[in-house]
Image 1 (cartoon, rainbow, N blue to C red):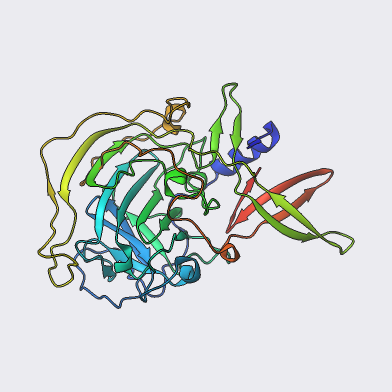
Image 2: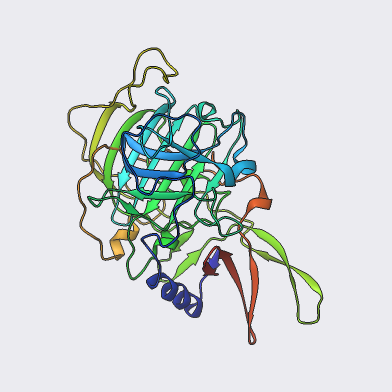
Length: 378
């Protein structure tokens, strides 16, 4: 773990204040201009517009053709949605075995389990990360866009990340930021080998369909210290650079020792439990009968504490938070045990990682972790 110096920390925060929340890029050429519920079912669609609205109205990225490996098809993935929407493919009822939705002041997040071989992911594939940057800056997948209506209207968002494996998924859409943490940091996309439970802490229980409000987690890899400083974990990476003399040298960024858990698991409240999540389209169902969403009475208001051995805070504890609006759907929150450094849904093909550049400024050498338009200094 690297202790961030005050100089570098100031640089990070300056970048964060100027971060972008709403999308500024163009819509992918295969996508509708705006999100829309109730579009025709098209299981061969190449639309790449996701919407993340509630426990029973969200989309994820998965391959367009059967028996695909995420790390080999990142640029090609297409949208799969619980409900018929956005001209996308529809997730067949019976695919999802557990879904947990949380709405926080800084992001919305969905975590879950299922049989994603039904979404063309190869059996045994531990998966990878999809995000709007990618190695070329064009996004994984290329033309992928994401919206959410948790503010009361559909908004296109700049920063998001979606981890997929053949059994597990998680997706976070960063819907706000504050003077401490930018949307880009809260949706940090350069930790592709760390897995869902490490990067997006929350409820990973393998049964149940729930929706909660929750505090915002600290950005992935950020570890506040008792003395008020911050340490930042960097995923280990070795690359090369060419010096002024024309010679090529190697450099290494990151740590050999991986923290086994995120800093904390945010507290949740206002939880609602659902009996199931689905669309009721019998012709697509992978199980007998229809699976339809229906609420069950009440929700426990119990909150999750921080991970064992860490402070009980969350990012929202030291931030100015925005007012929450209610959302449909629900997710109970209590993280299932400590995540390992490579839990399900991690990148296995290093050749698709974001690029890293070596930066020299005067006599001071800093490694800059460059992904798309953002630079993260360690």
